[in-house]
Amino acid sequence: MVKKIAVIGTGLMGGSLALALKDYDGVGEVAAFDASIEVRDAARELRIADTIAETAAEAASGAQVVFIATPISAMVSSLEAAAPALEDGVVVSDIASAKMGVMQAIQEALPPGALYVSGHPMTGSEQSGVHFARADLFRDRYYILTPNENTDATAYQRIHALLKEMGARVISMDPESHDRAMATVSHVPHLLSLLLMEMAARERERMKSIYSVAAGGFRDMTRIAASNPDVWLDIVTENRAFIIEKLGDYQQSLQGLKEALARGDTEALREIFVDARAAREELSLKAGAEITEMFAVSLPVPDEPGVISRITTAVGGLGVNIEDIGIVHPLEGETGILTLNVLGEDRAAEAAAHLESLGYRASLGKA
Image 1: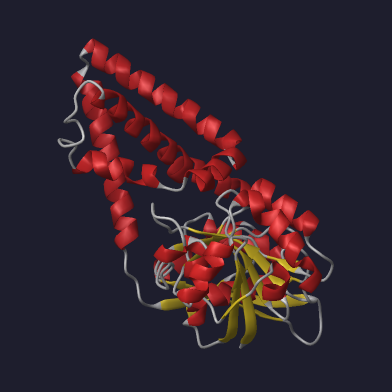
Image 2: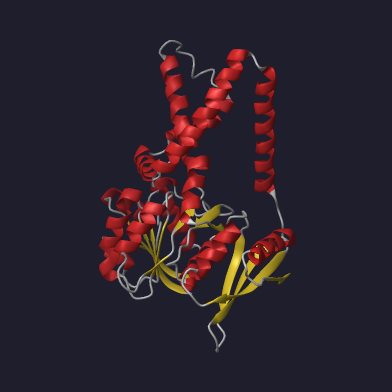
């Protein structure tokens, strides 16, 4: 039972997070705050949380968990505003979609006694604002946790459990791998959708009916161009190093495509079509996989900083979703038993084998 959880920032993501936590019987009170008076009034009218506070400190007072759900550029100032009310042992988490710089800044601003577990929900909408918040936004969606050597094991376990109760599928990645992956599958595609929409807008000056004849494929590829510009400006600025790297990769691929078209090289063009189709089919299969049997991967671990980060990110790097995590500390000795529950025997065996290759003594059994 968590007596109180605070959510700072009640846009689409923060509002949905507050609603999802309200639906969970294991939370006594959900308090929320937004810097905008208009948004606070709307959140109060929509009953986004049990309490809509007038300050960040009021929302955070007495909370065991605090989620910072503001735009990236406001996260540190929001934490600093809430800091005077944070109690010893409180767990702070954020939802930033770029991690490395944000995590360092938040850790530096974290008051003594507070613990920090960084996360990023892989969900959302091109719509923005508290009026579009929904309690089921996180259900069956991946929620990435990015622990590092400073992450407290008990704090990680608490956030993991909360997210699972919300219906999210929790996976762990190290912060650098996260930011590189997001540049590839989220940030660069978003920027490309803007350029496609910009190209169509220029063409509309010559052909007024261009939007009328735009088929479903174009609409699908440009849907996210309607997202909140301020939120995305924060994201691409924060992760610009990896975005620039991936744009360079895309530029090379685009040049190869142009050259194949100029040569009339149908074999090269066909190879691009075939490879992309095969990759897309693999993506669809992974997204639709349904496995119901739960297996436990257990291993002894030293009681030292960073062990949670090393193990969970090693498993997360395989794309394996950790359904639940448990840590037992024996009465004697400095070794604990870490248990990861994984859906599917093959996936659990893959995780156990990978941990064995890293030097851990992992055992596999039914959960």
